[in-house]
Image (spheres, helix red, strand yellow):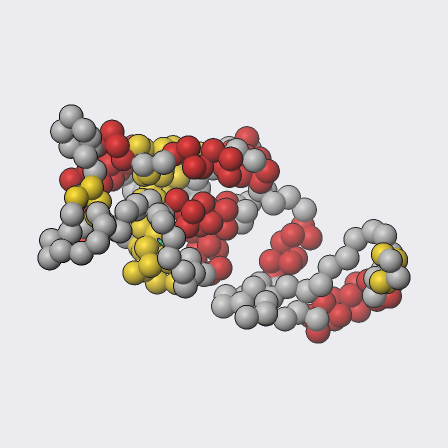
Amino acid sequence: MKIQIITLFPEMFTGVLNASMLWKAQEQGAVQFEFIDLRDFGIGPRKQVDDTPYGGGDGMLLKPEPLVAAIEQAKKNDPTAKVLLPTPRGKQYKQSDAKRFAAAAPGQGLIIICPRYEGYDERVLKWVDESFYIGNYVLTGGELPAMIFIDSVVRLLPGVLGGESSAEIESFQQDDHNIEFPQYTRPEDFRGDKVPDVLLSGHHAEIEGWRKSHSLPPAE
Ligand code: ADE
């Protein structure tokens, strides 16, 4: 799965993409990342990418010409790639979306735009296939939402997470709330707090029953 990222701050991704599971996924060839530096498409000697909003207001907006030129470059690299835009004005991103994008891999490439400043010129939406927000809070740009999106999709790619038990946990995950059950590891007794007996029983049906009955949506 090829993921192209259009950003003014490619260095923000270095730690996240080059550690742990995302690093392993690249090593295995399950995912390839490519960065397109929006600044390269800036206008004039100062490589301008932003401008003031028509109608007045605070802050700056990403100009359409550099952004669309960057998207066109990404499309040249991967003509059938879907263009995604993290924005508070999109629809809520959910686990079912992560599953959908993971299921479409490896054939379906993705291009993720990372807006900055106060947003983008509305006319770029013509080049966007899907826009999404990751939570009811406002961030300074699209880089963190892009990383969250990438992490949630790549961990679902075949072979990336490893162990079948991870897939088992997955089966408990539902769309609106990812149902998880309590888990324990060694020691059996930690400062007087004991692991529930059923989990030590080796009785798979009972363990599954216990996990189901202890699965709750995360606290609000
Ligand atoms: N850009 C700024 N805040 C955002 C959010 N919560 N989700 C997606 N994109 C954003």
